[in-house]
Image (cartoon, rainbow, N blue to C red; front, side):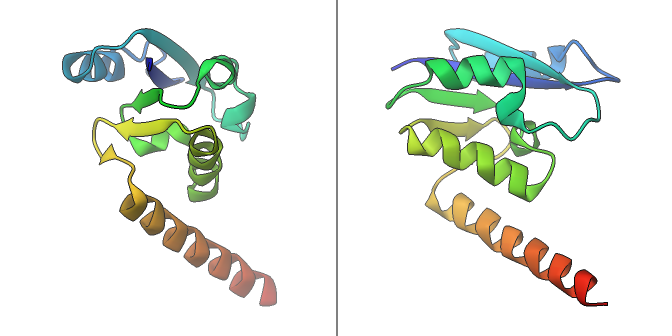
Length: 125
C-alpha cells in the first residue's frame, strides 16, 4: 500500500510548495506528482503528473491532495477524478477535507446534480 501525493499548482504559484509542505507535515508520502494549472480546461486525467499517478495507483493505495479542488476545478471534473481512482480501489484524502468517504462523495454528487439542473434551466431560457 503506497501513499502518493498530488500537487496541482497554479500559474501564479507554480512551485506548489505550500501544498507540498502541508501534505508533508501530515503524511509520510512515498511518491509525489505535480501538474501546473494554466487555466486551460484540460481534464485532470490528461495532465501528465496525474496521468502518471493514475497508471501507478493500485487497490489499497492512497492519494493525498491538499484540497478537493486539486482534483478538479469543477464539481464534474472533481467527481470524474475521484470516481476513476475509487474504481481502482484507491483511497483519496484531502489535507483540508479529510477522507473523501461515502458522505463526502454523496455531497459532491448532490452538488453535481444541482450543477446539471442549473445547466438545464439555463438551456431552457
